[in-house]
Every structure is written in structure tokens, then in C-alpha cells.
Length: 310
Image 1 (spheres, rainbow, N blue to C red):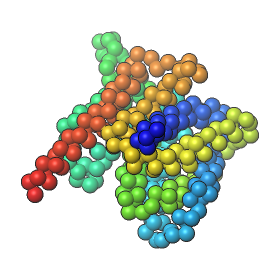
Image 2 (spheres, rainbow, N blue to C red):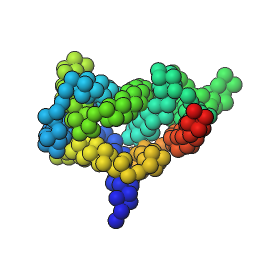
Image 3 (cartoon, rainbow, N blue to C red):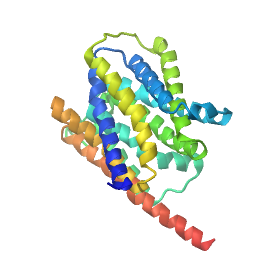
Image 4 (tube, helix red, strand yellow):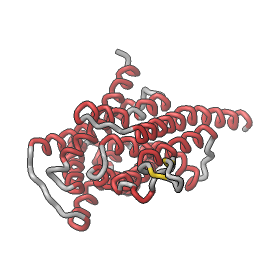
């Protein structure tokens, strides 16, 4: 088996794990409060990464620490919003709304780093926005009594709002993790961001939630899966595999995460999205694919033209 094929298969496996953990976490939250769960799983992941990469951790300087602190802060915010929101919404909706973070990356790059946005990326962002409205805003009636496309904004699920906060945090995390790993070894950044996120999680638990925990097999399974497979192993596989996969292939594979989240929830729990939410999911997925695949191709062509003119 070639390294390229192995890399593609491993990325699909990682994406499946990420998608499937939405249901695992949702079920675990009956036994533990959301932020405490994050604290434990992230501490376990940090310990595993320290064991994997202990040789690399002896070379942490101030610049690496600052990069790890920044990425860790956004990782903390993303998981806190996501897990708290998941307690109030469904695994399928949480998966699709989290996936919007990919579409938000070019928006943030344009707003804060003055990067140009091509028409394909803009179209993808627009499609994702329409999907967001369809998934998060319940159907409502207009003044004439007919069904309103934009829905009833006063009935938005608070869990969906929190999950949108997660998408924003993860969008910034994608940008800063990319910048950090270009300057520093991924192994050190992976450990530091996880350790920083775990520290922030433990610090905020007593401040913002009523803590409860019941040690059950279901909870231990969730901590093991999300901490070891979903974080420590997944980050390591991603770092290795992306050396042998084109960015467009990686984006296409990662776009399967919300699909796996829905499929797992449907097969195990029988969860159905409904016509409006299902249409919204299709718009979000189409927006992600358009922005990440067509948008990247258009950007690459523009950069090639500029290079030829220089």
C-alpha cells in the first residue's frame, strides 16, 4: 500500500472518529457536567501526547510557548462552546454547525489579514449561511399565515447558538494552528495547545457550571475514545497524513465529519433531521465543499498568474 493511499485511509478514519464522538459525548453528558468532561478528556489527551512526544518537549522556548498558548486558548473556547451546546442540541446539528468553521476561515482571513476572497469562496460562505439559518432557526409563519423561509428567530435553540460560537473559535484555531506549525514542530504545538486547553478548562469549571459526575462505563468509554483517539491519536495522524495528501483531498475528507456525525446518530439513535434541517445540512455541506475545493483551486490559479507577472 502506497503512503498516499494509507494517508487518505487514515484521514477518513480520523474524520469518522471525530464525527462519531458527537453521539458518544452527547450520551456521556448524562453522567458528567460538560466542562468537567472536557477537562478530564483534554488532560488525558495531554498526558498521552507527552508520552508520545517527550523527546520533542525538551526544546520548548518562549516563541513555541506563545504559539501553544494562543492555539490552546482557541481550542479551549471551541470545545467549551461545542460540548455545552451539545447538551442542548442534537449530535447531527452540532456536527454540521461545527463544520461551518472551515467556511469561516477565509472570511476571517479577509477581515483580519486582508486576504482576497474569490467568487467561489464567497459562494460557499453564502450557501453555508443559508444552511445555518435553515438548521438553527425553526420554521415560523409570516404575517399572512404562510410558512416563512427565514423562520422564527425568537425560537432559536440556545445550544445551536453556543455551537456557532464553537465554529467561530475553531475557525480562528485553524488559522493559528496553521501559522504555528509552519514555524515550530507540530509535536510541541500539539502538546502545548492541549495542555493549555486542559488548564483553562479546569480553571473555569467551578466558575461557570454546577459540577456533577457519576463514574459509569459509558463515561469512561467516552473519555477514552475522545481523549486518546479523538485528540491524541487524531492530531498525530493528521500531522503525518497531510504530508502525502493534497489540500483539496484533505478538505473533501474533513467535509465528511458532519455526515459521519449524522450517520452515527441515525443508525444508533434513529435521529432524523427533518426536511428543513436536512436542507440546511445540504447547504452547509455544499458551502464547505465549494469554498474548500473550488475556492482553493481559484486561489491557486490567481497566485500563479501573479507569480508569472512578477
